[in-house]
Amino acid sequence: MLKKIESFMGKHHLLSLATQGERLWCCSMFYAYDSQTVSFIVASDETTEHMNNVAQNLHIAGTVALETKTVGKIQGIQFTGVVERCPEGLKKLYFEAFPYARVMNPTLWAIRLDEVKMTDNTLGFGKKVTWKREF
Image (cartoon, rainbow, N blue to C red; front, side, top):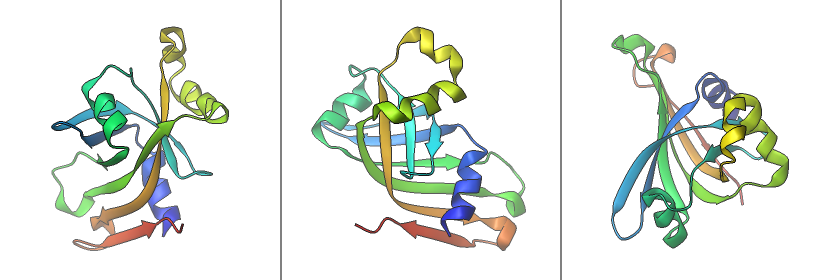
């Protein structure tokens, strides 16, 4: 099931991230996907509201969606996971995807995906594909 989900994630580059600290907050982020760790690599300053929330609560949720008005083409994922500092070895993925970001010297983070549910109407109306990390 993960291959179908990864194929979808590989075709997109923008996610919505939901965090909870003193209050709920969400944001949009560009991402690079790492299939070895099943993680999104994202950039964000530590002073943003969503990263202040992450400092209080590492557990997050989010979405990646295909924008379409055609019901039969609807695809998207919902995910949960945790945010951690990006390991050095994964930073190159982000800069390969977004080379212009290197000059900004961003702080990079890894969103380790723990559970993903994909809705894929191309497989039939309301068809769901799921994946869950085994710990």
